[in-house]
Length: 285
Image (tube, rainbow, N blue to C red):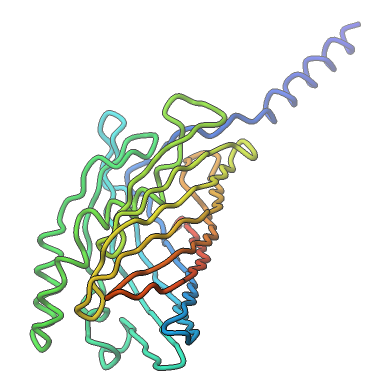
């Protein structure tokens, strides 16, 4: 009888230690440092004056993200750009911008290298503040003294709204109240354009969150000196794979398909945009 009781106790211990819980918040420590590798491909297809045209873009970047403070459940992290590269190609042109080669493009990517800022977020990934952007912009401008036109555009490219939008897409995925399925609306800013995303999140596993988003872009932008009105809608599917102990993502993948029209100078230009993104987060040892 004693042996049987011992066996039941052992089985309970094994089952108890293997039981998993949903990862519902961050649990980070000062000094945690991650390398963030971003890879993105985008294809924009449009018909301009009856002629099809396709623009392909490949973006790749590498960042270091470090937890520098934890205070009452609020995390402060620094983000440092290590490398950045963009390749653009179309039937009309091709261009490469590379932080590792100052002779490519306009020198902006080379100036971005080793630039940094910090941000704060709570345990569920709500972005609370971004700090150090002014100093970062001044440092980048100082590296662009040979190209004053690009230097003058830096504060528009690295504005707070765009930075916050990027951070939200990467870290604002936890439910506020521990739900298994929840919906959230985000208004993001990309290239000075507001993008509305209504996303339904759900747990696929205890450490995997899936998002299905309805995307709306209704905005006016400027391209080559002309105003362009965008009326686009589409969907995005995304998956966050999380570390079970820290809640920090190990991988984020997404695919979006958007279509609609761009209108300018009395012309309507049908277009579609397909974007594939993969971000890996590796803890430095």
